[in-house]
Image (cartoon, rainbow, N blue to C red; front, side, top):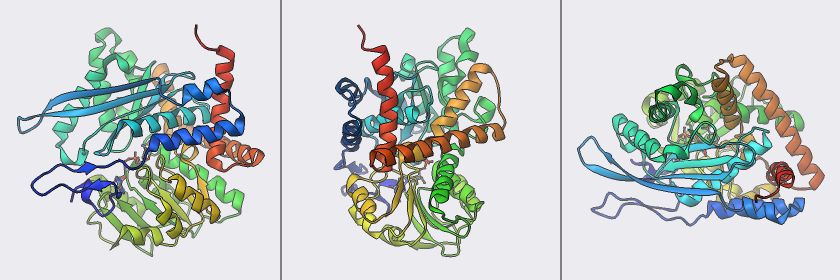
Amino acid sequence: MTPADSPSAPSNVVPPAPGSSRTIIVKEYDFFKVVQDYLERASRTLDLADFVRAILSQPKNELIINFPVKMDSGDVRLFKGYRVQHNNLLGPFKGGMRYHPSVTLDDVKALAAMMTWKCALMRVPFGGGKGGIKFDPHSVSKNELQKITRRFTHALGENIGPEYDIPAPDVGTNSQTMAWMMDTYSNMVGAANKQSVKGVVTGKPVASGGTLGRAKATGQGAVFCVIEWAKEKGFDLEGSTMTVQGFGNVGSHLAVILSRLGVSTIAVGDHTGYLLNPEGFNAHKLQDWVETHGSIAGYPGGKAITREEFFKTKADIFAPCALENQIGETEAKNLDCKVIVEGANGPTNPAGERILLERGIDILPDVLANSGGVTVSYYEWVQNKRSESWTEEEVDAKLEKAMTRAYREVADFARQHKVDRRIGAYGLALQRIEAVYKEREIFP
Ligand code: NAD
């Protein structure tokens, strides 16, 4: 089964026509428009200067590169790669690289804009960027994956750099992808500069200049938000239950870390399907399984359920950690939980969000909840600059402080302005960006 025709595929995927291997993805959902609408709403709340809203409503640069790769068969295949640089007022463009068949320019634009808000919210001196390649990484060999990554990095050339635009892992990419990107880039800058450009990507393996604590950082950051939410609500995490959609980097670390606090993951799903275990999965073992097998498929110790059954499973916490646009009206009506922690970017669509808020279900929004990744990426970049390596305890302690502060600031801002937490997170970020634009003004 391929990701596109799996039971978990969103409804905008058209299966291959008979005799064809091409899957068509029809984009009915305009993710970038959704992000622009949130920007609009938050701008009104704040009475944001018109020129600031106008600048932020579009990315600064949009790059599309079609590049050829010689596959294992000897055939040459053309790939489409994207890099969108949304804003670099506060620092270098920063954001992940996504390998997925559904990658489009508009999605990358949306994700790049969200990186601008996240960095401003977390007081990280970076701007926003995002990139990706439109293909299914599960359908190529490791050798091909390496060639695709290196060729794309080479094609990007000077459009990335440790002081200019810094990629990181996202859906379908990981620390290995980052090692290939860094190695390719460092071979392009000449021997004299090789050592000084490690910070061109973050999320690298630790031995290649990555930081301890980065692999789990996004999940860990989301956990710090859940802990704050539980304190705010007087909710006891010990003995509580959770369902997780997407058991990759973010979802699996979130489940493993929360399991140590007594939270039991009772249903999981990924691109291959959904599994239920009312007794609770062993999150460690499931994580190991996914690392070895590439998905949750075939994991012993869970009963296969449909996507619909998954969304109806009663649990205290729901953690969407896969893709955008997963919680629409139907899912929002079906979900039976107290809080949604958005490990993924944009998992809740606006129609779904309205229903959830009406139903009194709390949402810890993506811009806040998954910003632990970019925060620890910043720590990695600082360590690369200083040729230092911090302990995991140091990284975790800094992250906890940063996430806790951001959580409280968003909650306070939302209360003061009588808005939901998502608009609160946007508002806080926009306020900080606006202050800098007002000081620096517009060139010339
Ligand atoms: P990943 O590739 O490690 O995992 C993605 C997971 O989503 C996999 O389990 C995959 O099977 C699942 N998935 C893919 N298509 C699916 C579908 N149609 N239905 C159900 N599940 C599907 O990626 P990740 O890094 O864990 O990223 C997950 C989400 O978190 C994305 O929205 C990403 O933008 C966001 N995010 C990631 C980071 C990070 O540091 N990696 C940081 C911030 C936000």
